[in-house]
Length: 72
Image (cartoon, rainbow, N blue to C red; front, top):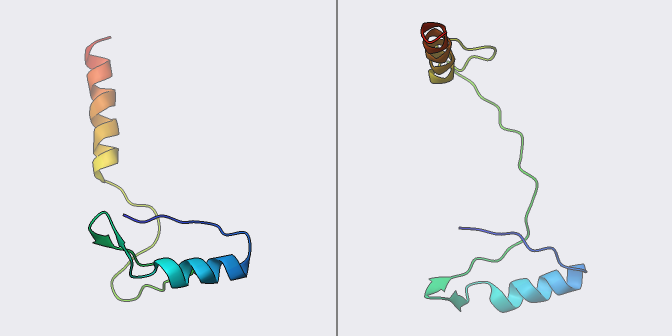
């Protein structure tokens, strides 16, 4: 798992990283570092954008509509 902690100052954050990075907690190693914004990902190749049909959700909606009609 993972979590985020907001520190009051940059100095507090640096101290926390120095103190807790690679320390043990409940038999696990902690990795403590500064969170950074996720970079934009560009997709190439055969990826398509737009609307998709016949997805499991679309199929479920269709089946539900069909069942409702049966029980009216």
